[in-house]
Length: 300
Ligand code: NAD
Image 1 (cartoon, rainbow, N blue to C red):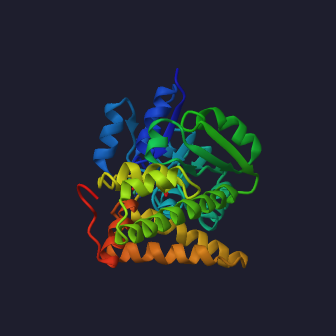
Image 2: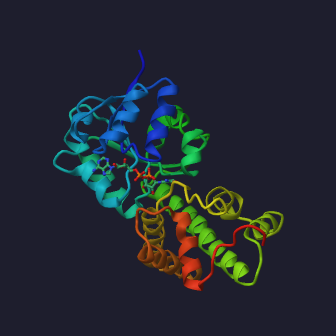
Image 3: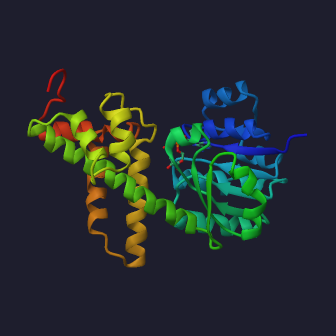
């Protein structure tokens, strides 16, 4: 019989991960307040629970993939939280919440006899759909070893970062500092190029054949900005949250980040001009408005 596991937060990332876990032979029971998201999982063969506690009364292992540190805290430790469940033994946090959330949550769960592992992921919705995510795990090594085969169903690159909870989270924040900075500065460069008469497609082609290439020039601009679909699948609010968490971490550790602070300002500007629900690739539109340029159409 298939091992049953629990999954909380079946949004852009969690939904495809649930599909891959089921394809990998696990029976998955899900919880999410968004009924449509739950229905989609159930249509693919999952079962559902009525609360995090209800889930934690029914399965031994629960993965969560949630949007904000506050929601992670409530889901793990709230009145109807995982901590109140009678069967759960392991909690694995795939969200990006930062070490300052994951550490106290893990401590509280541990006092209740529940082992916590950090396992934030990278690779976007495409990576989640193709089971090609990078997974950055920290926590007790033996428990990591036990759950590694399950994590390999969602990510082809599973890294063990260290024994201290929060190390995986720090690693993930550093990664997103780099990818968020790359996206913002690519939008700045393309804005200047358009103002100077350069064609956006040609600019991206040249960056990708040159030393300026990065994750924004290689995937986000070709797929979501040049097409004007703005469908990268990573929300503006989530991007700002990750850069903010990274800068807070730098401040707490006494590390100066000049470029990182610039990136934070760029994302704060985009968020204030737009909304948390926008796709993060829409930062380009806010630069266009700021520079008073029209996106070139037709022959450039
Ligand atoms: P999302 O907003 O698409 O999905 C989050 C899900 O959590 C939604 O279905 C929402 O209904 C659910 N949720 C909200 N409150 C809840 C609660 N109290 N209890 C249970 N479920 C609740 O977000 P996402 O893009 O899937 O991102 C999830 C996490 O993964 C975030 O921490 C994000 O930073 C991280 N992440 C996202 C990407 C990406 O490309 N989207 C990539 C890597 C990591």
